[in-house]
Amino acid sequence: MILLAAFLIPTLLILVLIWSDICRKSPDQKRTYLSRLHQYLSQRYLILLSLWQRRTLEFSTKNVRQEQQRILLRRIRRDRNTEYGNLYRFSEITNRELYCRIHPLTEYGHYKDYIWQIGKGEENVLISERPRVLSVTSGTSGSTTILPSVKITTTTFQQGFGACFNAKFIAYPHTRNLQRTAKFFYPPVWKKSESGIPIGPNDISPTASQLGSSSYSTPAAGYEITTETEAQYIHLLFALKDGTLGFLEASFASILYHAFAFLQHHWEPLVEDIRLGRVNPQLSLADDVRLKLNAQLKPDPQRASQLAVEFVSGFRGIARRVWPQLNLVLAVDTGANKLYGSHLKHFFCEGVPTYSPIYAATEGLIGVNLWPERKEQHYLLCPQSLFYEFIPINLHEEEQPRTLFMDEVKENEVFELVVTNASGLCRYRIGDIVKVVAFHNQSPVIEFKYRKSQMLNVRGEKITEEDFYQTLQRAVKLWPGAVLLDYCCIESSLFGPFCGGSDPHYEVFVEIGGVRNLSEDQRYKLDQCLQEDSMVYQSFRRKGSIGPVRVHIVAMGSFKELTDFIIANVGTSYNQFQMPRVMKNKEFLDFIQRKVIS
Image (cartoon, rainbow, N blue to C red; front, side, top):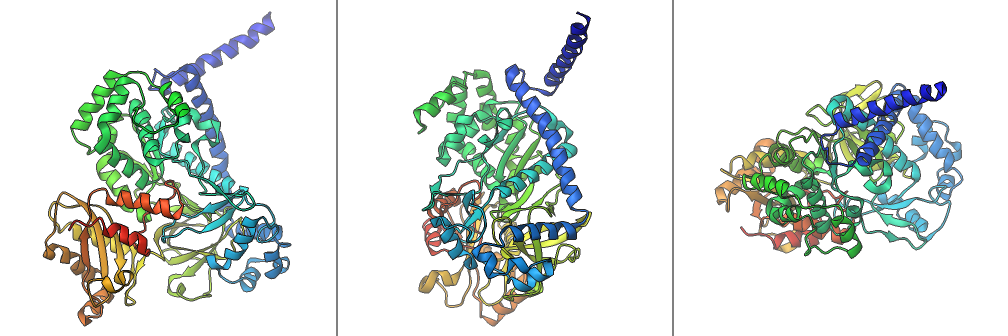
């Protein structure tokens, strides 16, 4: 009896302490005990796991030369007996210097035939194992490519997210509260290769692990919806229903921006559904999915009335007004997403901290942001994920320039990034331009600058995506009352003989709020700003070898329609799509041209 009491009393005490901690950290007392307990235990597990993953990352950054060579040689040895490994003498490679002498720098065309063979079912061609999936890239250039992806790629992504999870808890301790996350994720439509290998985006679904199921405001059935409009509606419906929501999350800022833009124009039916406790009957959903979702809803007239009052008051700062306890917005807002991130920070999510956690591509995890509290989005390169090389920016136009290793780069220098990944891509030029801004232990901390493919260049002036965006923002400030909502630019050569001018020039399509039209003088401000910001451009303009920029205004919502059109045509997913700021596809040009109103 004494032994039983000695066991039961501490056990009961522990249970009481756990329950007390759960109640203290859970602002939504309407949630079931089991739901809160599941999230509490899952969170405790993830805290411990993320601490271990953070320490593993930290350890790998303390001797990057050794770690990088270990990763490289392990992958080279794994594939040394493949057709590709025999061709490039992998069995002879004993160090990174020899690897760079034997193997050339590559681009996608180098691998196209090998990937086609893999899709047909041929084995031991490029890599020694069968790919988990043939991953479709984002289609930023106007078309997608397909790259093999092995299991280790998913593992490194999870380790990266774990390190970011740890960084988030350190920077924002209140994120340990048991609040739900509205995660905007759209299940892709999968295809299969000739040999049955799945073809689709390298997305990690929220339903892939049961650990986080109690953490999301959207029920599991909501992640079964493959149509974007219906899925977006359901994500918003269940997010709005939860007044204690703690986080908004999406892979890119564009996804959250489009969700808020949709909410701004369609909030009435969402409020009505919350009032009545049902899913809108006009929404096109499978019967079983609708049944599961309706089971999660109860009439809530009080919440509906609160929401209606806030929506009628306007949408500046709406996120914090409808979710007073919102802690964080998690989404990548660099590169093509910088404009969307700005709209979130300064309008819809005003006053809510934002965190861009990872820098990644279909090729693999590149870097993690360990400093969520900082305004700048800087990423620590992960030595265990990829083997990195760096082409100095002054050499990046050469076909086979010399490269530097992680331990050879210097602070404040700009490079083109080259990677060797776990899925058979060797010395692969991914097309990203980055700047080394600092070092963490021995590993470079980088800032993403721009994509090589996203550059305006009709006469050799080479205006980068980043520079053009800054100039465009400056020009918009000279258009009284105008707010830049979206944009893309096109080199006049894409128009063929119908470009509307004899000299090569830029055609810029803008979606703007606040004004209905612009005078010719106002439109010309953009060309003047470009001349002020680029001496090379100014020189060509004065010589008359480049014509003035032509600015076109498109109808509201045109770029969302363009997004849908591109995704439908190139086969990528909403979770990974990034709007090409320099459009190089004639079909997409024709689409946006049809939307011009002025």
